[in-house]
Image (tube, rainbow, N blue to C red):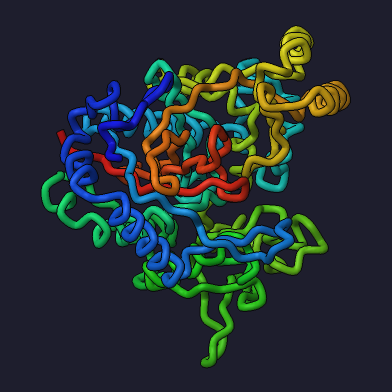
Length: 477
């Protein structure tokens, strides 16, 4: 069997137009895969998985009875995005991030968007991610969302849609970098013949973004990466990025506020810290300002931050833009702040806090995807077409009890990519998470994390729900 026998089915396929007809940018890849036997592909797949495991590319699952650490599944058939398509995605992502940053600057400042009745005040104030403690805070250069992972999907019509924004502590970029390293040894000939844009520059761009947060007068600012610790699901990524950037990986117990500054405990005494790349949620970062029971944060950090003596990426309070109800208003934000039409569309979204839309959702639970506004990772969801009547009844009660907490969207026919499943090729559904850095300029890393639903027929791509990943190749035209 080779890829000429692969059937794209009734979905948009990222590599094939129809059976036996690859997309032009994918032809060299398809030819190379067809030149290898299934046994050889399986051997390379296994070698790639072993290489990733040896590199420590694993993640933790807290609810897993079989143990906390899992190998991150990886498929060696990459997803390809043409240069022309990428140019549009890049432009649309930059527009979106700029508008979201304007929104964050506004709601923690003058709140013009509320005063002009563009977004109801109650929706913002009731968001779990909105932090009153951040009112009046002025991050360096008014940049709030320094690191964003925006989830994109492609529907049956071939159009791209933004599924959600991740502005607090987006994860997964380490898998992008390590997957590319492994793929270069798995399919080396293809890399020699195709013009694949590199992803390896991300750590240097990230460090540059973080240094941009330091006070201008400091000749050699100290940057650290703050992790909750080794039991966090993304700890591999924390240690990987710290190592790649050449900065210290620290936990809350390594830091202390002293003499009005944040200081790091070292063998030579205290050393001032100027910038933190935080991988801890807002509510845990300072027990004096937020959750008093937090053992992960640093007492007094918020005061140092508010006084302009510390750069934080991402800024505290950005979680309000992750709220799935606020997400529905991002196209409105783009028109309001930029005076432009959105380049990338949202997925059509029903807001359950509006009575008429709630009635529509309740009448169509078997057809819609219902999501909790403040959850992620594939949790708190109802996938209507794959749900039971009991599950639908349960969600109907949840929606009626707390309508602000839920949104609903149509079930999308996510695009697919051929994947090596056992000894055959199967079309598996995928999404895409590009990573965007906002420093002196907005930089979009070419490619991103393609998550793939490796369970047959599944639409859930999250690693915590059985998904895996593929390398994403942006190919120059």
